[in-house]
Amino acid sequence: MTHAVAIVPAFDRADTIGATVTALRTVPDVLDVIVVDDGSRDRTAAAAAAAGARVIELARNRGKAAAVAAGVAASGAPDVYLLIDADLGSSAALAADLLQPVALGEADMTIAIFGGAESPSGFGLVKAFAARVLRSETGLELAEPLSGQRAVRGPLMRSLQLAPGFGLEIGLTLDAADRGARISEVEIGFSHRQTGRDFSGFAHRARIGRHVYLAVVARTGWPKAVYSLAASLLGSVISAARGVPVRDRGQQLGGVARQSWQRARQLLFPRSLRDRQSWRPLRRRRARGP
Image (cartoon, rainbow, N blue to C red; front, side, top):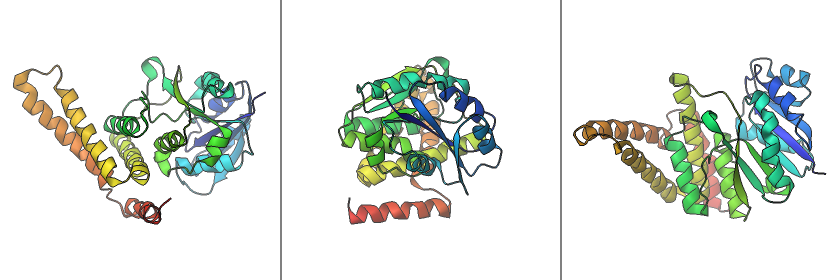
């Protein structure tokens, strides 16, 4: 029998965490559900505990990777880890399909592709950048390179150094591939909360983008990261030209180019002092070598 542990990082998800935990507890081979409350301001921890999860509460919001690391540290040594977002609700029961290939020894890491209309949206340039980096560095062609729903073989997961924040997923994939891990995608009908297209939604995407970019820089170096970002920018502009009448392309492409460059600037040049400080450990680690 496979011993699997589900780790659910959660921040202000009191409305969905109970249903997510309840669903995960029905998944065969999942013997423990660990919810890491990442400094929530609502009743996330209480809702998770009421649904039957083991809850770890962090005193302050430390980011997704730190929450996952806390869960791994508290899990013992399971055969497989399930990494699941807190907003999947009842659809988390479908994680059995994600777990099975790893439990059967057919893969070392599986990544969920959201089926149908619920495919994660809103990443745009960041998703294209992540896909390009993985293709050039590992040869992997992934449809959802930033998907947070994963199953990972236990010894592999415990051997990886997690990239900070939302760089978690791209870092996991790059590091696992570097170790020769077998990585595959599984289409699953998960559903989750979509990121809005308001100011807070765009700010959230920008934060994800910075974390992804910095995780890539830490693993490939500045030149490759900048080249991949530039190529992704060009790809966005070219894609926008398809289906646009020739007479309108100048205006259309100009707008796309400006928007893409603004997003790239958010990745390359974070404005806040806190973000600038977060670069320093990466620089020092790279200077010292592996």
